[in-house]
Amino acid sequence: MSEYNKPTNEAEFKQNFKQKKALMNKTEAHYESSRCLFCYDAPCIVACPTSIDIPLFIKQIQTGNVEGAAKTIYDANWMGNSCGIVCPTGVLCEGACVYNHQDVAPLQIGRLQNYATKTTIEKGKHLYSPGVANGKKVAVIGGGPAGLSCACELRVLGYEVDVFEAKSTPAGLNLHGVAPYKISNEEVMAEVNYLQAQLGFNIKCNSPINSKEDLSALESNYDAIFIGIGLGVTAYRNIPGEDKNGVIGAVEFIEGLRSNKDRTSVGERVVVLGGGNTAMDAASESARMGAKDVTLAYRSSKDKMGAYSFEYELAVSAGVKGCFGALPLEILGNGSVTGVRFIRENGEEFDIACDMVIKATGQAKCGTFFNEIDGLELDQHSRIKVNEETFQTTNPLYFAGGDAVNGGAEVVNAAQHGKAAAKGIDVWLKNK
Image (cartoon, rainbow, N blue to C red; front, side):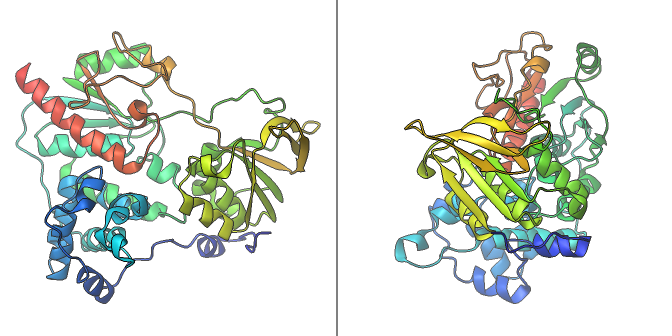
């Protein structure tokens, strides 16, 4: 049973969705940074997909050079503030901290990263400027973490960059797909605006690129193109009753929640289908929106879920119940949802009553769009094939990164792809 009441205004919404990782104050940051052992062969750096020099930026915080710490972070990761908040640090940098071998709490690297970057953003301190113009232009399709990272790196290298974003606002997953108790809309956009003010890349919102004609125009007007569009809508799973009123995809639910906040409609009894991190977010959000009964139903055992254990624990702490070894057979109801019928491995069937079903069963790939690009090869899972070092595709004009390449990973992985692809574009155009 959820302990949350349905929020009736934005203030109550913010209370229900208050941030998991509060911003450190100066004193907290000073004392926490003093705990770092500044390991010579720091395992935290190895564990970070963007290889941030973590001991260096922590040393800079410790010595009062907060802006220097922010620059160390951004030099490696253009999504430095967002990643400091939304990264699963417990299984990445903090999970690799040597303190874990001594029964001592690991260093709070994510919170220190957030402290350095957010403090610098709020001061409006510019750390970068565009590189000397080289006369070449690059188009970036998709304004999410991969696309924005690519744009930032390209601007430092002297390229003119236009980012084509289908939605009315940029930032992709950070703004539309991450639970609001992890990062707020305001924090996401503050970082985007901060970077754009320094580097001057152009963001063209409400500008989807989705046809052969759109692609041909880009090919004619730009020297290279980066694809960072991520994944599509929630995939259709051919469950009978999937089209009933009250059934919604988890991605669409989370995006609507971030946009509509307290105005979001949630059922009294919710069943979430899936076992990944997105399912955990959707379940926890449903409880925080006042649903009185939220069941997370997964087809296999608990230990086979794709979600991080701490994400499941967070959902349970919000009042979510787990139901494992439950394969959905049918969504029940006459027009509108009244329940879900499941079957166990032993053949036992059972029903769970509900008035809302959230499908967190994976997102559709954008294979149809990718097929519009001549010479672009995809793997068997409709992911774009790229050179692992340069991120160049089999059509040399195109580079790609993020979910379109890895099939769905963390924001930090997308940021790393975008930065590496920009360097790949630079090398290719210089040698062309």
